Image 1 (cartoon, helix red, strand yellow):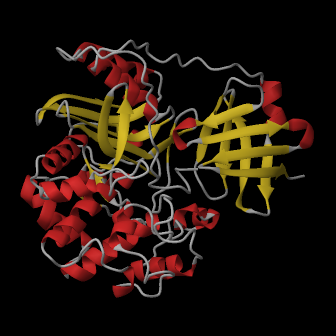
Image 2 (cartoon, rainbow, N blue to C red):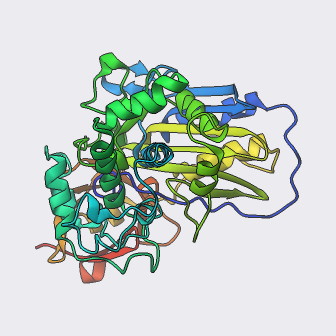
Length: 445
């Protein structure tokens, strides 16, 4: 569950290549306004969106609330946790150190963290490209039980070092938050500064980012948004302790400042062109802190993010010199679907607004699913209840979230977190799928 266990995970968009492009002439801002109004009216998302062309912002939208309980509306000032988009900042900071001659892509992890298995074989480039083989600690189901606890970076690195390698370095690719946590700590060791200080000095101050910082505890007085899950109404989500994700996912920003960052990155204002070319060289779908988004015959470079109830994406289309940034603090539809809508409108592609009508399930059928499900290989129990005619799921100690009825009988999902559930009532079990993991949970008596 991304909001509870797979925090700051990447998720690739899958845009179909179907018909020739009709180049965007004048942006249809009214249609974009209508799209975001449709999403807000149906209570499907809260957040902010911004778009730039040739380095200039041409559109923004804000919908929903940064603080639901106080009815504080999202605005241009609202700051969101951007999750794994932090990795793009981290990669840029590594290249700054490389350009300064302080490290290289060939530098061995053993120089800084010899206790990590295979450290003598793992290079900086492997960490950047998710090819280190270091186990992704947020994939451990036990992560669910402690993500809100205060832990030092020393404790997190000790944990990372205890896992067996997932594979031999540079033999394949597997997304790893562990690798970027280690990169953040290398930045601190080499620069002699905290990650937050180094980012401020080398990126934020240089390109004028006033609201982009390393996250601390959410504070509405700083225009920080709380994040929420939808349980028929918006309910506050977890708050991951930010020193845990560190350089892998602990930055807060605004869509407008993400546009500034990505535009500056691709305009050579942060790192040199040779560094950017290396950073954006794609190997098995992945660059260094960046990956590609195909949309019809267009290609963007960027990253997605997800932590607690926050979802985000920032991307740059080099050919069009167009950038988008979307930050959400509450999502009950797939972020991918929103971005497809936005890009379809920008590129004048055929597009129909989403139909939010769901498969109807009788109250009697919903009651058949109610219960508490668990398994020996899953660290938490999942409680299934009903409220106001919808199905609600809640993991032990976590926030509840609403399940949507899918097309097939007994199938439900929480799409934005990539969770699917299949109930087997006659066998008193539930099959949970998410992030490649499949767990069969048994209803407790």
